[in-house]
Length: 312
Ligand code: CP
Ligand code: NVA
Picture 1 (cartoon, rainbow, N blue to C red):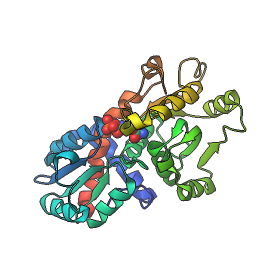
Picture 2 (cartoon, rainbow, N blue to C red):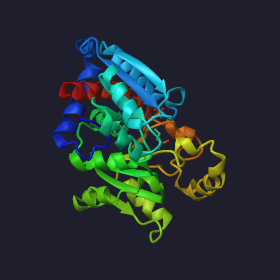
Picture 3 (cartoon, protein in one colour):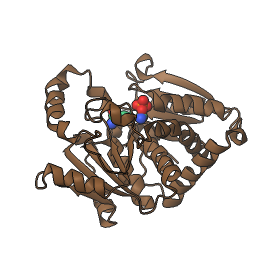
Picture 4 (tube, rainbow, N blue to C red):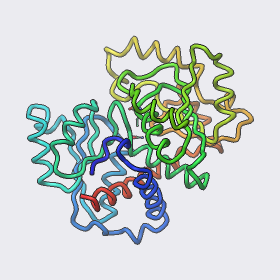
């Protein structure tokens, strides 16, 4: 069993993982050394703080061993991808991979003979969404019926929130005047829409004030993420597009003024860009659960490892 996207994961798979994440957080001593001798390889094409640390530290705390591979220092780039994945599978028990392109990750997982976890590609970020469900469960005491509003650019994180939410009854409203081309997944959106759990707001036909005001007023959680994915931040070829987006997206910034009078919790997967998708003030606001959310990536990652190792 892999975790490339949450689409093939059942409601039970997701709920068990969330429940185990909370047990691991509350009783870490019971899980120390539980996977003695198992090895994790992290194979990363992109930068990372949370996912990398949650992976490396998580497996170590469970009694296993982590080996980090920066793609650029390996022979993956010059060899056949399937060959290299077969080799890696012979050395380790589980692989956490952060790839640029979803299609390449799918190809890699097909060749692997051990579980492969998507550590964030251009289309999905499933480990983020599982950690986020854990945080929501912890803060609100439930998942079913929770209303989450994602404001920003519809991206990998947004897709995984929809994919996870539609399995466990979290309703995701999306106010996104921009969609990352790689994140377009009509099949997912239609499935979630049919269940009434994905509600995209048409920002072309709804006024900015009313779409934001209504979505926020009806939500338990307001969530945002970067307007530009990490791989494009320093890419000169993306300069013009980055400027265009920043200008277009500024009215959608989450800040104290926008959330004035609202009791909602504020979430962000981090890294945050203060002054762009969210104000620094709001990151540190009493309604922000952003730092619990990032801590929970560690506990949740451990639960994901335990599930996939048990099923392999
Ligand atoms: N949220 C998240 O995945 O952070 P990193 O990119 O730092 O891993
Ligand atoms: N959408 C962001 C998520 C980072 C965790 C990105 O891909 O850069």
